[in-house]
Length: 456
Image 1 (tube, rainbow, N blue to C red):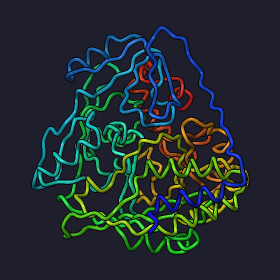
Image 2: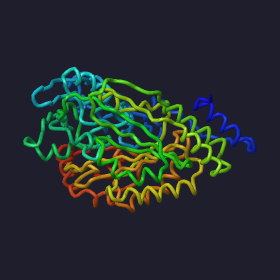
Image 3: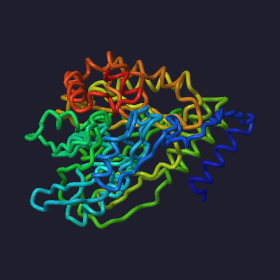
Image 4: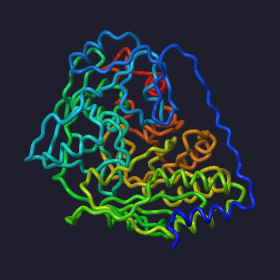
């Protein structure tokens, strides 16, 4: 009997027999700078900072902010695709300000250092009997970075991570420490929950959590038309629901997760990194015929069995992402998702045969946070990706007007070209946020060139 991977290999060999494998030449610019460059995860953002600092305590951070010349930019794990970090002056990592500080068993609240990586939060919280309400599908980000960009998971009744913040501590441009919540410095709190690193450096965060829980995750493949037809029902009937579409296949898969008391278990699973490499090989071999490519990929995907994983919540949300990419994600009113998705699919499969990375669709509950893309509306997000070594700009430039046409708001950490003038109509508190920013940082110490284009 054929294994799935041997079946894929057979299909690829048969389909490619009549065509030569195309070659792809990738540009690799080599900068000759004396300073050591900083790059984000995908390599799309780079700078040559004069100074890199990782303070060991609040006092060191205060002294650094007060005395450092030029601009200062906080940096997390580099998983943002937008130029939020780049500066040739000083970048500050909170990697040494990491871990669980305190927790309250009665309220299920916990205070964490803002430099804590998301993947390092689950186990300490579980030991305290708690768990985050939700998490994104990558857990390499720091807590401060995730909150600063309104990073989110999926679930129609679940908000972005910033929606679970009940208090935070901020070190301002003058080195002052501000502790804020909905009752104390409430305007600063409303601005700081999604702050882009423009108000200062967030050092501590108090999160409203849930009692620890276990999730059952089920991954199932379907024709994309069937997924689109049932997406709203699936979103309403499952705690967590998202779906992915594989371009030029006609197939996608759904991920649903629900709280369970079942014992931990796992079925055979496809490694997502291997899957991405397989799709790239198919793209390379079959780019000469989209129809043959769809037949080959679709035939393979139809052989895939349902995957089921039961695990602690923090172990079930994230997937390892070793194959790098660049990403654009917009957050649309929920009712606009299907129309926008169909237009994007038609465009990409007509004009961009080189694309192989999946589209991703997630659901997010509305919130009341000033600079949150989910402010006062139920949301569905659509994300498109390009392999990191390939030029993302032509496809993203073509797709972005569709996302904007359907009233989309860009993810603050994902690639987009929206200006301050374009963003303001989406955020009624945009100017109020900027006023708070000016009060806390009148000299613009935390503004790099990108942030200056938005707030000066």
